[in-house]
Length: 278
Image (cartoon, rainbow, N blue to C red):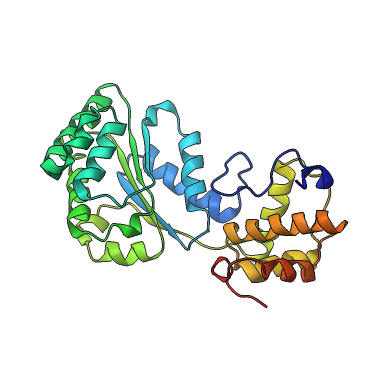
């Protein structure tokens, strides 16, 4: 609605992961490089953790876009609230197993695990290195599921089957992994995606606007400082605040958005979105 007013060619702060306007802020760039290294160096497994809204899923989506075809299929599980057998069966089907496997998941995780191994073996024969990504992995509080993931990583032992397992989740995932040392010991790293600093927040906003074709400077320095203070540096909250501020700025005919405008729009967002409200 406000795109023409601010000179935008596309929405600068869309809801959900958006790699079309991906901004390589230092924390996101570092996380992306670490995950790529884990995959391309054949290190087996890694985890990426961070608070809600820090951009973990966007980093993973970008990762899938950047990898060469050698690292396909790229299986991204975004609904891990499945039982152990269903989760393993779903990954196997994504790798090419018959859809019927999903209907027979009740036969047990061992059956699904054998099928998954067969699929991974077949891709290795084609000189491919599949990447298995489990998003929202902090909800995997079933010990049997975590034990099966450990067994899955055993497939990498001789005779070697090349694949990578990535666990993505809230910071609580670190505590969960600490209770399953046989799995955590197999991870090459547990990378933390921190919130953006104040300067990174300003760079993030300007980068998103530039990627959307904006040649103006809608946000004054005090607005950027307020954005960081209210969002805690989480890209999701920054985007929600900016989107609503741009809309209000358009409706009110503003040339520049200031800190008081950010405070006003913050009152219209759910408190859970923001670190603080003032």
